[in-house]
Image (cartoon, rainbow, N blue to C red; front, top):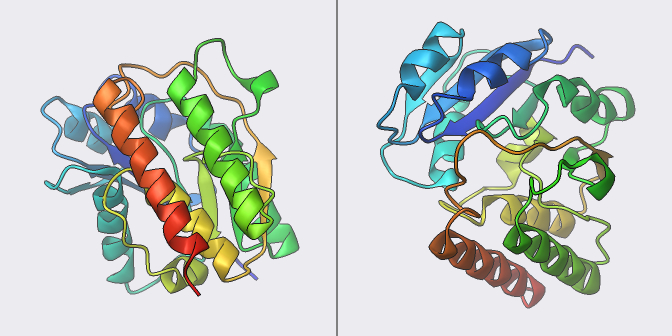
Length: 231
């Protein structure tokens, strides 16, 4: 089976990094979709110059941006077979996309998460709230669902038809955990691939602020408990 890959990159004020991200994405990707999430810098200009399709989503929120990218793809005549989600801050290594999609292409796996393992992370590239939140969320998913997830990493790939079937709805901080919980509930196949992780360019809009870290934690926990007690 021939696979077509589209990448969705939510971006809010990432003019210093988005060009690097786009440049490092392997050529096996057929379209790179940057969703400008109400930026007030040159993110749009830089992304277009680098060759990406740029969409605008004025509602602030990671989930809003991802849903905008999905809406655009849904309206295309030719649909991709694989969707990759990737952050615009250059903390991930886009060239590892080939490793992320490999289990889908070669082993027919439904969903792949890039796991930011400790031995491959730069010092201080993940804040304490990020590390604690990952540990708590994945521990609860293991407890309630027998999950083997170790990370809520944003660098991830999923079969397009499986993504549609998840009926994703979270508009803000709960997007990643919602996807993983729904994958577990539907018993889709999944694996984690260890990925490198570096200090991002610029300041995080979530883990870099107390408000962002608190809201993200609340959202993650609410999704987990919602699904734990849902029949």
